[in-house]
Amino acid sequence: MAPNPASEVEDVKVNTKKGETLPEITPPTVHETSRVPGNQMSSSIDGDVGSSYSTESKRGSYGSFPGSVASRMGLDGRGVTWDSRWVVLIAALWLQCNSGLHYSFSMYSNDLKTILNYSQQQTDGLGSAKDLGASLGIISGIVFDMYGPRRTLFIGSILNLCGYLVVWLAVTNSVPVTLSYWQMCLTIAIACNGQTWFDTAAVVSSLRNFPDDRGTVAGLVKCFVGLSAAIYTQIYIGLFAPKVDHFVLLIAILPAVVGLAVMTIIKLVPAKSYDGESCEDKAERFKLAKILVVVLGLYLLGVTGFQQQWRLEQHISFILMVVMLAILAMPALIPFRTCMPPCLPELTSPPLSPTSPGLSDRSPLLPNWRDPETKGAEKKKDLTLREAVGTLNFWLLFYVATCSTGAGLTVINNLAQIVTALGGAAPFACLSLISVANCLGRLAAGCWSEELLHKYGVPRPYFLVAASSIMCLAQVLLAYANLGTLYSCVLLVGFSYGCHLSLLPTVTSELFGLTHFGTLYNFFGLSMATGSFLLSTCLAGYFYDHNSDATLTVCMGPQCFRPTFLICSGVCCSAVFACLLLVKRTRKSYRSEYKRLKHK
Image 1 (cartoon, rainbow, N blue to C red):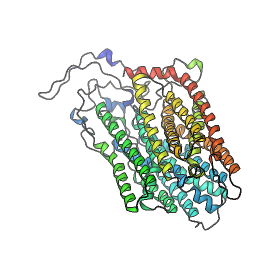
Image 2 (cartoon, rainbow, N blue to C red; image 1 turned 60 degrees about the horizontal axis):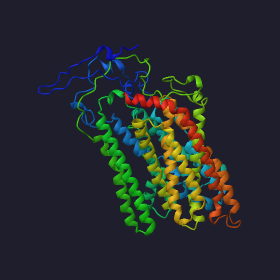
Image 3 (cartoon, rainbow, N blue to C red; image 1 turned 45 degrees about the vertical axis):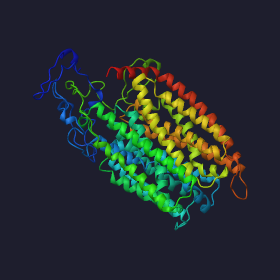
Image 4 (cartoon, helix red, strand yellow; image 1 turned 30 degrees about the vertical axis):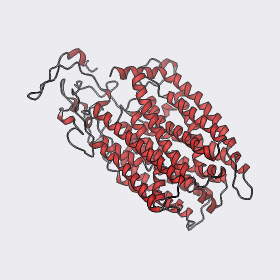
């Protein structure tokens, strides 16, 4: 058992440079997340993590500092390096701009429907296939846990390129052989599955590199997934509109190029490289990142509204696209962000054994309350997928994700048909609106839940209650919406959907730990595919075809989707009660976490 530093160190004087004085330092505080046993951060097969190191070599003896005052300015006084976790985070943000392109399905779904002569239920089946591909990330999680982010990104790039190239051939009616319906479903699933590999590399790397800021980092990283469809829509409008086949070719090539480009940057950063970072500096960097995300989201929102009201010339759209790309490049300033050094460098604790309890930054923040007799336990080991599926908390979270994200995907997948049914034209505006709202929901849920947990101990599942309630309300409003009110309903759906996708990975890591997080996180993707198939393909597709003109296979009027939205609202209402039960079961564990954070 490691000695208690407080019992052995009472007053420590710090020798400083000439002319500089520092007050006496109180007993040191042990920071759990800054200690990672050497065997957990050893070099991976492809060199993602870097050379292994021991806790002993990092910590030294009592009274040693993590770095001098000068070394803690900027990036530890060494400037920006590829090993900085902030550089990795920025690369992850740009990578995530390519991880949500399955939300752009409505851009080319009508073309596929017309060229391939599909019914609406068959078209919704393609939508469910792309959701299954975008959600089936268990393999990518296993590959990441075994081999790291580099191979994960390489495989994702190849899948994205090959899959969307075949979809492009289908949209241009250039496929050399006739593909059957199930082959088209398989093709689009493969294309969208490539984005899951991007998402796995970005999310898991970021959360492991920022173990004390999981909510904020998850919100930032996931919000760019929400913006990806809007970003690519603006690139398409600025360069290729109205040629839809060019859009499909764009999302086939550019994401693959980006994925290959960041292979050498996305990595797991050893804790010793950021131990000396001040809290003030970290807060300033996160603040800058949030501001840039909000600016980008509001810009896209404004541009979308502008394009909806006026028909713009191609060169104007091109200029708007260039401005968007300039804003998108601004996060590159975050690693260079410097602030004044902290007043006092923190004193570290003595070397501890890697087997000492509570030393891993991958351990769950919260106990896992699987059975009544486990209540009161302070901390449990990280759960594997097999162990996690034996808990009620896991299935409550899975049910919430199935209902709420399934209802959101029903709207996203059928956006083009919803707009047409209500008398609208192209779905570009609604697609951009739902993408921006998706982004803002991810950012808001991640940051607000993190702040309220740290300040007041508010359990994060409470935010799932709020998000599911918003989705329930949005579905009711959609059932009776017209073309004028559709935009506000779409904003609510996108915001709620984004909240769920930001909260689910964070809650998963807190309940079940980070050691097997790659596998657990991607297993929850199956809930989205399940919800999409049940609510979008089976439910929405059936009612649409039932109410459509038999000769035109097109449905006009609010009755096309009204039964679907009313049923979805009831499903989301049941998800609210599941969230409340999850809150009840985890309240004590979040209270313990709040006490830990208060005394940290």
